[in-house]
Length: 260
Image 1 (cartoon, rainbow, N blue to C red):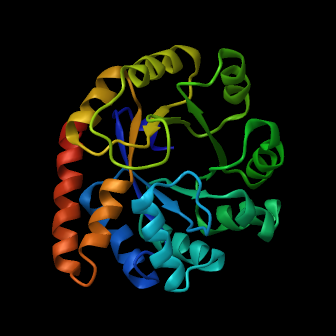
Image 2 (image 1 turned 30 degrees about the vertical axis):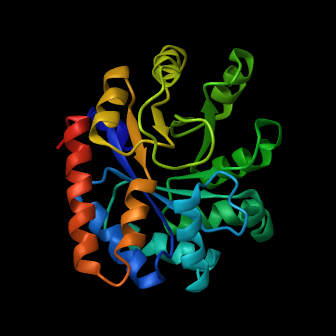
């Protein structure tokens, strides 16, 4: 993945696939790449998104109402992959993967051009079929860890994870937070000592100051979702204003990371 280029931390821009509709979602993905995002995380909208806060839930409803489905997710990945070499990661839920067939989902994701898949609601105890299918398809099975993950459980997760370690930087669902908890900083530092995999915090990171704190703690990347997705919702019907606001946000976040 892009972590091998030596720059730290990478900016991972997260959007909901198909939000506000399929053509606009492609345009937004292209714009994020052009604005300097180092990686894209594409969230497949789901009717019961237990890991997502209100901003991403609303985006998911917009996308589903506009006709988003799994076939169109892979079509979106293909469209974006045809124009950029930056890593593309899919975040989804177990029911969506199982409905398609676990091996088929990962095969289709890889063929479309995805580099990794995150399944938000699959615990370690049930992750083996998903991780096995990912490796057969030659893409990365990306797993979550958090501040509450026990040392023994963390060791088991690190043994099977691929791509990068997705650190839940704030307890609860996705959404903008006011600061970075000290426990998150300690967790980043602990993970850096325990694994060679890149460590990438997400959930609640939205400002240049928060990005800088994560960078100073040793994070290899930062995932920004709700802050970007909120702008998409706020500027519905005004694409020029939306693009200006998102480009400005990306520029400020990269300045916080020291990679602008």
